[in-house]
Amino acid sequence: MCVAEMKERRNVGIGVLKGGGGGERVEKLKSSRTKLWMIRATTMVLLWTCVVQMTALGETWGPRVLKGWPSCFSHPGSSASAVEEKVPEVPSRILPPKRVYKNNGYLMVSCNGGLNQMRAAICDMVTIARYLNVTLIVPELDKTSFWADPSEFQDIFDVDHFITSLRDEVRILKELPPRLKQRVEMGRLYSMPPISWSDISYYHKQILPLIKRYKVVHLNRTDARLANNGQPSEIQKLRCRVNFSGLRFTSQIEDLGRRVIKLLRGNGPFIVLHLRYEMDMLAFSGCIQGCNNEEVDELTRMRYAYPWWKEKIISSDLKRKDGLCPLTPEETALTLRALDIDPNYQIYIAAGEIYGGDRRMARLAKAYPKLVRKETLLEPSDLRFFQNHSSQMAALDYLVSLESDIFIPTYDGNMAKVVEGHRRFLGFKQTILLDRKFLVYLIDQYTSGSLSWNEFSSAVKEVHANRKGQPMKRLAIPDRPKEEDYFYANPEECLQQSEDLLSST
Image (cartoon, rainbow, N blue to C red; front, side, top):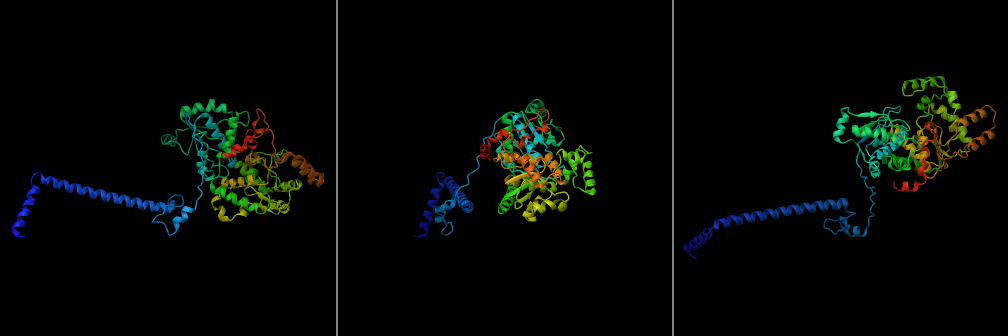
């Protein structure tokens, strides 16, 4: 082909493109191709991202879903074994449905006292919040009492379980909504102590109007603020449900408690002795039996140092004869021997530091050489995070006390009472409730020579034959609630329902 002919054809082609709007079609064609290329590129990026994500998921969740699929990303031989291997799925905990109600306001509470006094108070406050149709803010624990424990609620109890397990009864929040929280932080808060041993009607008539008026009310005292008796059965049963189901210790405390129990069980049966012979109890009660002059002076100074301990001048001898003092370690040794407690049994001491130390524990240790404590069963590293946290230490003792073959408290304080009631709930597990008034009389008779050992032992066994945590009616004394039986020591309204309550935990 000649050069002239080639030029002519090129000119004709150009003329065809330029003629009849050809330029516009060229631009559209270029634009379409660009868009198509962009779509393809974007699609490839998205597909590649999905592949990478699926690969990552395959590594993380493979045992449940992805590794059962044959894949080029599977490890050699892994796909076939993954298909054959059936990994059991852990059933998720079914949460109760939320209770829907018109919220009348918010209730804040500051608990006072030791762990078990606060435990009972929390049960009462949840129940009160439920029947006032208010929202409860997670209770604040006592940090200013004798023990000075800085623990927060979530350091001792499983706070998420507490909130979710009770949501079909009451709404519980970890903190106030922001607007109300800011108002409280500015000091605009109505705070008051409710009247002790009050019926639920008191809270309806006196507290609920205040909550409706101020939106937030703070109860700054919580010990024994709800009556033991005369309450509707649904009130009593909710108190039990919170205590036995809603309040669960943190996994760290529960795990360590199980370790202690396993160590004890590995060496046979064991008794938990709640030996309440600690410095704070002796100073508070004024009981100085067996103490030397220096110790008496120290305990007296402590009693006067705490203004909320109202009783200052105390006759130790009179209180002891009235059964109002904790048994001494020496009296406890005599009592256990008189009850024919096998000296080969392990005895776990559930208590803080015993006042007087080894000197006061000598007779008990001689009579029962298998005395153990959490500090002797565990390594110091196991208890490192519990040091200076008396409530967390008490939680460990609580768990061990529930599982013991026999529980024996030497004083009827809050731990003794709450553990007694919990053991009743768990099937009336044996709890020997010592009659201290009669015991000190018998001990004095024996030590003075007026009773032989056999006479003393027979009398001790006889008086305690029906004091072993058996089913019984709770003693109610109208107008004298401090003298009647404590609800949490014998929650008789709940004991027939124990299986149902336990199934909800």
